View 1: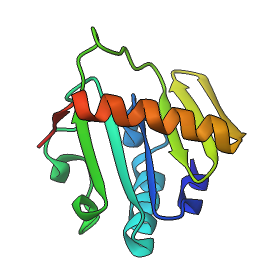
View 2: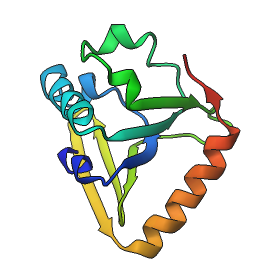
View 3: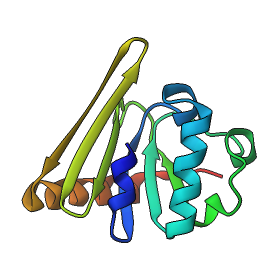
Length: 129
């Protein structure tokens, strides 16, 4: 998960679990703070309205300047793990109960295709306040 800080500019992906629950609030806040410091923007598609007001789940100032989320209902795409696409990397992570794993695929063509799929879904998704 820390490797998303290697993004040159923007990362995009699909969010399933709240970082506070999956990796702990302390680590999540450290990661968010680094994103703000490095000015690394992130767009995320979710299919739950889990985020709520940003102030409910983060105290990192200006996080809203680097993070944007949109919502798609499960009938369109049922997101069951976190996915990140950045640089030439397609990565996915699964944090549920005692099962945790992450996988990174470093391949420009796979990352490009996955980013194109993300962009199609982003256009369909509804903005999250």
